[in-house]
Length: 172
Image (cartoon, rainbow, N blue to C red):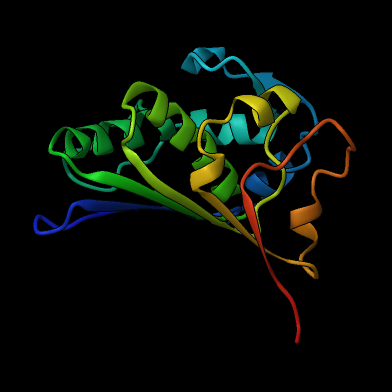
């Protein structure tokens, strides 16, 4: 979802996490894919890559089939950026992961357009090169709970890395 008001300068992009069996199965795709298709020189989790490039279902009458999730998001936020609005991205679980990649992509194309990225229960996203090249670490906040196993996924040491300022929730 993309939320905005004509009176405000901020746009909020909300991305949900896994919500189908197919999405959950994609979470187990524990290899990486290059993001060169987006002009990004790093590799991310193959399942998150697929989620970014799967066909986006139309949600409004003027929407059409054929656009991927990232293409539809870009087509929606770019006119708002050109109006001077700044983007905040939030997402849960895999939605936080793909939101971070989308934020990095938009920030590279439209510098200073991303206000912040806030994720909840996000798994690790990409390889070490992703961690080094991610431009928004200082504007990204990863909220996690130590009892949420998803935040420790994928369980492949030194292959997948987290980015961001970490905010931990714990009982007590």
